[in-house]
Length: 184
Ligand SMILES: [Zn+2]
Image (cartoon, rainbow, N blue to C red; front, side, top):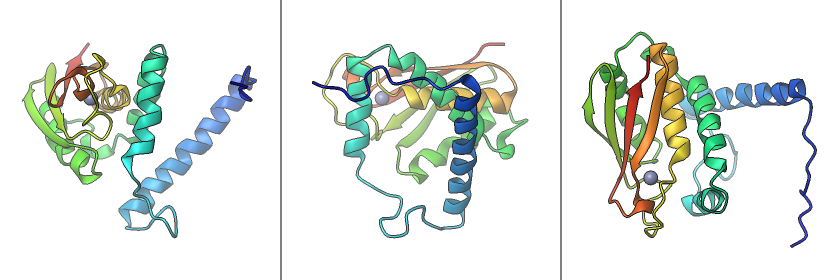
């Protein structure tokens, strides 16, 4: 394979942050647009098949497991950014309750809260867009979900939270299960 992206140059840190900030602003506007019932793309709309997205994502993690650490951090930043004022100041069980319908609302998964107290929570995703129907590859691949949840819960609680996927359809389990731990 001749890879035209080999040794891609890395811009200066300030330039990377400037680009990331432009994207954060654009993504926030996308959410506002969606909330108003407007489409991001005028003709095709905002819904597409999950196949292509999860194909490239899952193969990324399987072929390059070191990307999981980066994906968790990227997800964490996304979660922090999309954390709404509405869930700030709430307890972890209250946050879990108010977030519960979101996954289904965006057709990502059916979410079930298994347990939740001030220090920890367990929730499950059924028919997860990232992993449902994949073969058992002895891996847990819903890393972005874990990172996004961790960033959102940490921002909402003002305390560091860690989220780890304990069960996953790519690991032979019938659903994904995530453990939320409040670390401080
Ligand atoms: Zn999963």
